[in-house]
Image 1: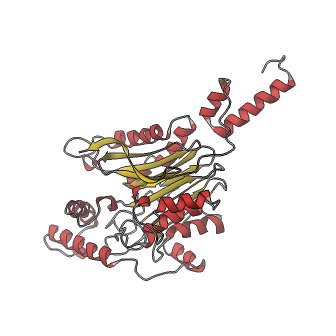
Image 2: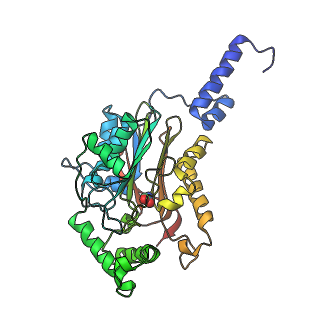
Length: 382
Ligand code: GLY
């Protein structure tokens, strides 16, 4: 700073730096160019998330993103709104990817993971490998609000839920999810020369089980999106408050004890109230290697549009997996899916996927109403 700057100029420059720090690099660049930084007295309310946020309806005919949008525009807490969106598939047996009726693990047990993050409060909470609670998203919020911890797991998480008034049930399988589990188990045992599960090693169950699950999806017995099914929902209100929630039953027929990306801060979800939010669905392991939700928010901090930031993360994952036959198809492409749902402080948004194409949607609700929009993708399936 030169000596001949007046006090007024010094204060002005300091204010610009402070505003830039708050608003992120794109605003800083704008301020540096002499443009007015994007200080907004009112932000555009918006809800963005996984496609199952716009499928099921409540008794008033509202889908999840519609409920969340109604709540945030009525002044309710943004995190509560995202959780209310995710509750629809959590409590419904029609969605076999989360909560009640989620496809179980290789032992037939439904085990759930969830994570939430409250931008204005700068707090987060999560549960993993929890059993018996249909709505782990609310338990994640209780972890956030009532403890100094971020993540409670297994029996401890279930005990915490019980102690905090959540209903605990013996078994979260629906007739549908248990029926599909029995079919999957029968097929894996047949593939193993009719040895029982007790006689098969876990590696065989994991590898063959994955193939069997995909075959069942091809036959229409399970929803392809529910193999790694999950729901993530993020929202911003007119005050610019940003929150997000991710909840899942994890990979279907997983090795017992397996936890994926959903409850892990920075992987299944990340929120920075000054920048934006990102959350995931899909093959959690490949997200965990790169903490993509955090990566996406950091790229938006550097000025990227949500779509570019999401595609940057997917490209990182693609390059990491390229050449590993476990993750490739016969065309030399990445075979698995991984999706991100992203919004920024300017209410720009994106849904991006490793594999997209016809019917591959994400859910949005803003002043144009609730809807599905097509995902941007690295590979487009015909
Ligand atoms: N993305 C959910 C999971 O892999 O568990």
